[in-house]
Length: 99
Image 1 (spheres, rainbow, N blue to C red):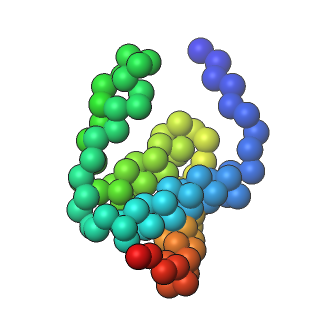
Image 2 (cartoon, rainbow, N blue to C red):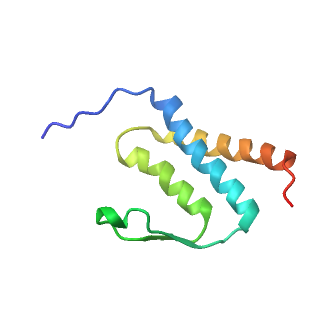
């Protein structure tokens, strides 16, 4: 079986995907609290089952690592992206005033 993968700049894009996930998780955790469990059923119309997560961080970590399992990115880029995304969200959170 031949598997064809697009040639991507693994580090830049791997970090980008993970950083978006981590930043979103950090902001949502700030708004709703750590341990906010939720179920994602957005893919049910395509025949997939609903997925439950114990927190936004757990969902972000799974989204990020899925890029490695898919053979698209390497772990160092993913780990860097998670760290950078969290740091970016922390900076925004410090400057954001939520009522």
